[in-house]
Every structure is written in C-alpha cells, then in structure tokens.
Amino acid sequence: MNKSSLVSSVFRKEVLAMAAYKVADAQGFIKLDAMENPYTWPEDIKIKWFEHLKDCQLNRYPDPEASQLVRSIRALNKLPEAFDILLGNGSDEIIQVLLMALPEGASVLAPAPGFVMYKQISDCLGLNYVGVPVLTDGFDLDLPAMLAAIEKHQPLLIFLAYPNNPTSNLFNADAIHEIIKAAPGLVVVDEAYGPFANASFIDQLNQYENLLIMRTVSKLGLAGLRLGYVMGQSNIIEQLNKIRLPYNINCLTQVTADFALANSDMFDQQTKTICEQRAYVFSELNKLDGIVAYPSAANFILFKVPPNKAADIFLSIKQQGVLIKNMSAQGGLLSDCLRVTIGKPDENQAFLEALRTSLAELVI
Image (cartoon, rainbow, N blue to C red; front, side, top):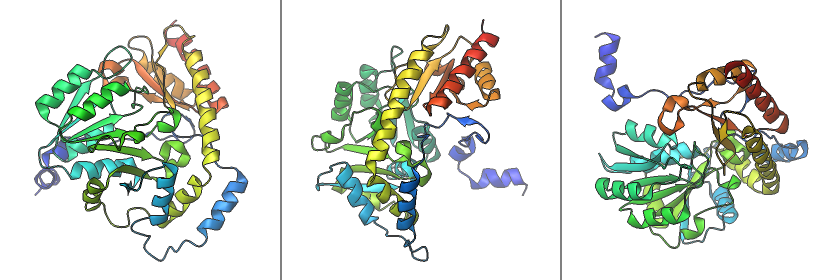
C-alpha cells in the first residue's frame, strides 16, 4: 500500500478535505497579528509569582477539577452558585467539547464572518456548519436571516462572538435576545474580547436555560496559559464534563491563573491603556486616504484598503518589520481587509508609519 492510499483509507473524508490552521512565524517582527496583550508583568509581580510556583508539585497529576481556580473565576465573574464552570485548554478546547457532545450530523450555526474555529472543528467532526452572512453596513447581525436559518436548519448549537472576531463589533443585544429565544438548542455567547467591550450577557444566565457564556484569559494578557472557560446551567455543564479529558488544566496553569486573577487591577490598567491606544489608532487610520477603519469593541481593528491592494500592502508592512493579518483572502465582506492588533504606543506608531509608507509606494 502506498502512502497516499494509506492516508485516504485511514482518515475521514472531512479531515482529508481540511487545511491545517497556520500560525505565521513572528520571530523578528513587531507582532500585531494575534490579538495578544502586548504588556508583560512588572518585576515585583513576577517575583511573587515565582514564589507561588515553587511549591507546584510537578510529580503529581494536577487537581482534576481545578477547584481553587474555579472558585477564583466564580468570584471574579460574580457567578451565582446555581451555575457551574467548565475549564478548557483555551477556548478552542471548550468549542471542541461542545461540538463533540452533539449528535451525528447536527447543525451548528454562527454569523459569517466569524471565529474560524467554529467552522474548523465542526467540519472536522462532520457536523453541518451553517454560516449566516452579517449585514454589509457595520457587520451587525442580519436578524431575519438568522431567524430564517434557525427555522430551516434547527441548529443544536449557535455561536455568537460578542464582540465578533474578525469584525471587532458588538452585535445588537436585542437581536441576540431574539436568537436565544428562537434557538431549539444551546446558544454560546463567546466573550473572548469582553474586557475591551464593557459589555456582557453573563447577567442573562438566569433568564435563559439554553444560554452559555464562554470566556478566555488569553486576550486579558495570559495567552501563554491556554485557559478558557464556559459558564451555564449545572445540568448542561455536567454533560460537557463527561467529554472533557481528565487533568486537562495542568498545575502550572492552575497556579499561575489563580495568582494572576488575584492581581486583576494590573490587567484592568493594561486594558484601559489598550483601549486608549485603540481610539488613537482608529482615528489615525481614518485620516489616511483610501483607508476605512471599522469601529472596534475589541483589542484589534479591521480596516479596508484600496481595491486589490490588500496582499501588496500586507507584504510591504511585513517587509518593514511589522506583522499584521491579511483577511482579504477569506473573501466576501473581508475582501480588501487587513486586521491589526493594538500594541504598545511605539508598536502602534511603527505600524502606522509602515502603512503610510506602503500607501505612498503602492497606491498614490
């Protein structure tokens, strides 16, 4: 048996049809492509963190329930005892667990464009993924189209990113309420970028039995920990826990995340600074001829460049030492669009200067 026939005979057709998720090599670049918090910890906080880590028993399996960390997350989110929390190795694992719990061939629905992992994991599992295009003006939900898709496909799981990735906007809250009411299954409001939006549906958990709130510490400033979590009705979390792999949150992550959340004031200040820089970058982008920057409630900005220039401008900016994200290849509403993460002030200035140079060389 040759190599190609072995692969085709072993792996499911859904896997064979997929493309791997690629992460760009950022070594040597100002890294503004992955929606990370650019700030590290002050030295005094690092020293205290090291003290916490020294008693971590690496020879033992971690607490399978991550009990102390769950208590800290519950307190941070003021989550009532009636609801439970499931932790994941990043939000990606939470998404995977949710989708693995669905019956074979179930429909999954989300606005398009949206977070790529909703579709990636759905396709991998052979589920029926339905992307419903958002409105062209402002990227808001097309509520009639969403409700029609719900009626037609009867999705057992709906993802609503709030704010949305990659468009960075907050969907209309009234429309989200209508979708939750109409949904025959679960609705996951993904609040990965919640710290930058000052908006949340967590206080609606009491109102809807089918509502789940998903969050991550990655965008807050702890991307290296790979920690996500989902909150919802205890009977729903109980079923998801059956799928979660044991010991999925290692002891170093548990200790570090718990320590970090006890120092939330530091992250609050960093978030404030990022939001201030977001306003500055947005203003500067919209001063440039040929550029349209879209309002953002996240820690990144989507912007449109002159027609058919996205790839050239992206490469020109990269050649000047700044790495952003080229979204244009996804087509549709993202045609001619690039996305930049908000970095430190000097990083943002370097990006803006690189963009100005690119526009002068390639457009004017």
